[in-house]
Structures are given as C-alpha cells and as structure tokens.
Length: 364
Ligand SMILES: *Cc1c(COP(=O)(O)O)cnc(C)c1O
Image (tube, rainbow, N blue to C red; front, side, top):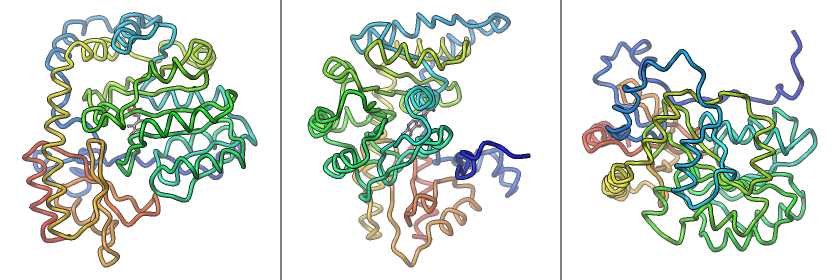
C-alpha cells in the first residue's frame, strides 16, 4: 500500500528502552534494572498526587472535563497569566504537534538547532515542511538569525535547556533574538527542563509571562513529564497570547487528556516544595557525574537539566558502551543517531548513580 510521500523520509521516534524490554531480552531481574534513559524524575511525583488520583479512581466511566478548567486555572495562577493563554496537551509533544499542524505546511521551512529534540523534525515532516538546522551543536543565536534571514521559516524552535545536550540559551540573548523576528514567524520556546535551569542559573531562566507580554508570536512549552515526575500521565502545556491558543484549539482533538492525568497535574502544582527538593537533589548528584567525567578526562556538557551528556573519546564507541551497559541492566541513551559519539545519562537517585559509576568505571 502507498502512503503519503511526506512519510518516506520520517524515521519513527526511538523512545528510551522500557524496563520490561530489558527483562525480556536479557533475562535480567526487574529489580536489577536501572533506567536512566528518559529524563524522568527518579523520585516520581508528590505523594499528594498519588492520593488524589486514588480518590477519583472510580470516575473512569465519564469523559473528562474538556474545558480542563481546574488545570488551566492552576497553571494560569502559577504563571500569572489568563486561562485563555493556556492549552493542555497529552505531553508537550502534543502541543508541538498542534503548533506545527496549525502553522507549518508543505514547502514551509522550520528552523531548529543541529542537535535537538527529535519530535520537531518528525511533526514538521508530516506536513511536508522543510527542515533547516544550524551547524553548531549548542544554540548560537547569531547563526539562528542568519538562517532566519535566509529561509524565512514559518516556525523557529528554541529548546532551552536543550535535549539531548543539556545546554541553555542566555535569556537576554534569546529575547534580543526574538525581537528581530517577524511577527508572522512562530517562535516556540521549549522549556521542558526550565524548572532545572531556573534553579541553577537565573540568567538562563525565562518566564512565560514575560515572553507573552512582549511577543505575539511566541509559544512557550512546559511539561509535567520531567521535574514533576508524571511522564506516565502524559500532560504538557503551551502558553501564548490568546490568538495563538485559539488557533491551536482548532487542531486539538476533544478529551485529549484523561481524567486521572488532569487531576494528577493539578495536584502536582500544589506541592512545589516536593519538586524543588527533587531539583536540588538533582544538582547535588550532578556534581558526582562532573567529578567522574573529570577523573576520566571525558568531556561533559555544562547541564541545566536532569541529565548529563558525556562526549566520549573516539576510541570508545557510544553505541557499544550503551549496549554493554544494557547487558548489565543499565539503560542510558546512546546519542549516535544525533551524529554524536556521546551518551546521555539521566541523573538518578544516589543509589542508581552509584550503580552507573560502578559499571562505567571499567568501561569508560
Ligand atoms: C521530554 C521533552 C518534551 C515533552 O515531553 P512530554 O512527555 O511529551 O511532555 C518536550 N521537549 C523536550 C525537549 C523534552 O525533552
């Protein structure tokens, strides 16, 4: 059967290997497997979320509240914006999909960093858009501007902090860049790890309300999958001026978030101390990775996230290392598909990190 030719150049997204697969393929006991591959919060979510979700477990027969007012209002309050400036997606992934389907089209250009979140390209190709990438591995605003002038893209993606490298853009240089962009170009600021960046370095932190107060062409993305520990619930959001949100609503399917997920995300916002505690622990543990890399003379990217990227020397092949670690039950991310001889490791609990160092000691 023939399918749309726009699909020909799409490689489907390679998700981090689930624990169940490693149990099946390598016969390793589930309790001996450590997954540091998908930037999940190793402490999970706030205990308040668990009790709130258990309390409504009998509500599964009815469709969810499609206005999502409880969650939208909680986000609006957190960020000091209006309900009309928020849209909720099944992960911020789905908001990326809405934005591309609403704004890009066949022949349009979409500009992004050379190495960045893989879903931007996949959704852009679905609509037949052309992908323009920078050459630099780290976001370089001058290069972005030159490519913007050359290609006049309909969408620009800025992923800050960036996945899978961990670097973050200086907020002031980003704002300066956006000022030079025509208001008909949609600038998407993906802040999936913004909670981490804000705590580590205020100069990298951007507040969605500042962005949308200044710009009518910016869409900020946030997610509950990383710092909030709710990857399995699939909740993310977009924040922009109301006309952008209205356009995104036209491509949104009804009931795109489950009742349990809506409750989980709303309650997660009520326990910020839990999240802040996890982020503080993250940066404490990150120091151990920095010390490990320094002792091994391995290059490590200064990270504003909950993961570290280790650039391996050419004698150590990242796919091989990832495979060897997997055989021992340690799931991490090989970045060779991004053209890098590097691995990305999510910062785990102290015990999970112990295990990583124990295994990596002899391999790296
Ligand atoms: C994890 C991630 C997302 C989205 O995750 P969802 O689970 O779909 O909310 C978006 N952008 C980046 C850069 C990410 O790392």
